[in-house]
Image (cartoon, rainbow, N blue to C red; front, side, top):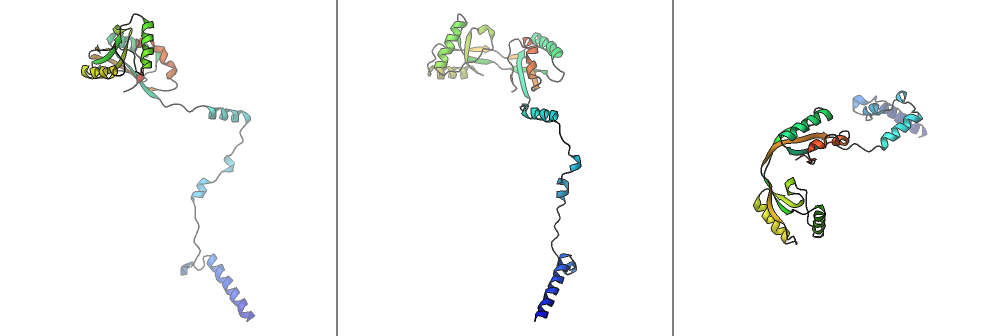
Length: 220
């Protein structure tokens, strides 16, 4: 009996050895092959490693502490008449890199506003601004210098829309405003700065005078 048990164990060990060495693969009996070639591409190559010096570590730490650059934005201003556009073109040709700006022909439709003014002086305008803030009424700069000193409580594409805006403001306590046309249809040149990044943004003042008081706003 003991001899038979030893014989069975020897036979079992032989079969296991043949199976583990894939000697029985022709009979469809073999272990599953574990292959992961992607691990070879992920392995670390110690021969490529190097020790960084103290100066390099400080430089890398300083770079990591810097804020991420903000994405470039598009800014525009206008409209400019022919004289203003010529002065702006000259200033930009001198101050800014080529391709960083362009002047485009454009049309601005007529605009109507809800207007308060004219006032006697800047002190009177500031007083009225305080009263409007107390009523939670928004106001904005005037685009027509001939209406200064005064305030715009909103701009509209038609006289009818401006009249409706005035009616709503009257319901909020605004009493001395009126509707008028801020300007008719305007034709001229738009200034467009398509890619103002952190490098160019500090240089906007280089041609501020040539903007003739027209603010730079995000492109439409």
